[in-house]
Length: 206
Image (cartoon, rainbow, N blue to C red):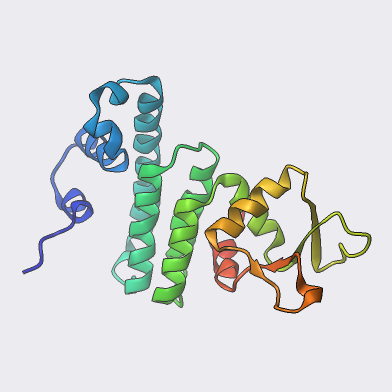
């Protein structure tokens, strides 16, 4: 028989809320768990508080939708697990809002398949709050790295290479969330979001 994962042990145990939080924080910050001096920092304290508050809110959301839990598909279940793991590792206050929305919306996303669930999960884990906001706002647009003298139509978004937004574009390119629009000379400097970002937007947009 396959041994249960750490998360399955966590979910199935009879720990108190404080014990659950302590273990969750430890799982989310292995470096702090290995280095007591790091675990004693103010940043570690803020992280533990953030994790505790978010796990409590996620638990409230799931408890309010118990009728949905037993009908979760395997891809939905994977998505939920990955969102919880993302919460354990997240240090951005703004990003937890997206993760919380993804849990609530994920309960309704019955058509999601394993591939999309994996892609969305990686995005939620690795993207910053700023990158997520940029993706939601521009998911259906072609991103053009400028400056350029034309473009910026309804389906285009020009990003000056020296602007603050270019930080988001660079990050999304590095994560593979933005990909080249094509292989011709005319497509140089033009990028598009892959299809899974439509599901990502549906999960986290207000």
